[in-house]
Image 1 (cartoon, rainbow, N blue to C red):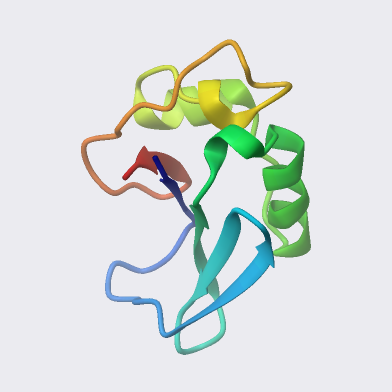
Image 2 (cartoon, helix red, strand yellow):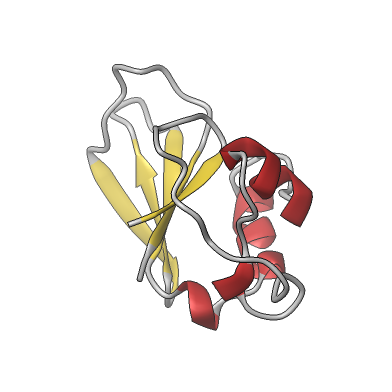
Length: 103
């Protein structure tokens, strides 16, 4: 299972390059260099702290378990390892800014 964390972006922005941050996290960038999303290829091997470290590096606000759950309208983070082990990754049903989606 993988997940995708959408960052704020214009609807017409598409990924033109990627950068592997660490095993299990790949950041997608638009043509203008803006980070538009984070692919989480191994959510069961990552922590919310690791995702927040990447968000910090990208100049984004940190995510909380409640933030992720509220964005998708469902509980979201069970497979993200320690610190988020009580809740589950759920599909969002549609692309949204700052949302996490099961793929």
